[in-house]
Picture 1 (tube, one colour):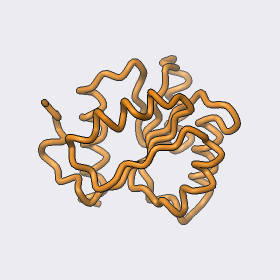
Picture 2 (cartoon, rainbow, N blue to C red):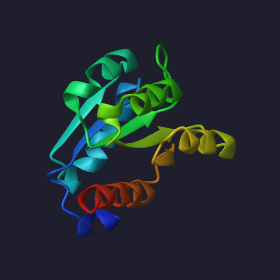
Picture 3 (cartoon, rainbow, N blue to C red):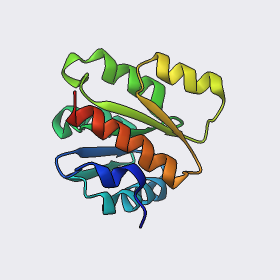
Picture 4 (cartoon, helix red, strand yellow):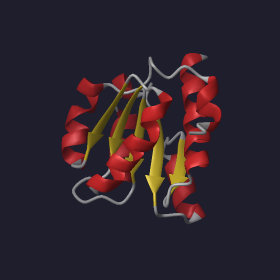
Length: 138
């Protein structure tokens, strides 16, 4: 499997948290990312539960859906960015919302990147490779 830029970085010390209310979406992301050798991949399908647990899970990278019931992705992002103990987390929004205004809103709110659905695998790998490099080489 071609992992693009992820083949040039060592991911085993990096932990991921995936938050998507649709279980098949989070499972697909996790399956796509398994070959990269991340240290851990934790999935949540309930955004409220994920928000309550993020401090305990303490991921390096958060893959966050935008459109979710209970706590939507923008509110989740806002809560993460308000908590100084979580400001090290790289947040990549993952959404079917592809309008440039929504993408710019996410970036302005503190998202580190944005990937649109349906997932383009090479773009996902390249995006995560940039985030991993940012963590490993601060």
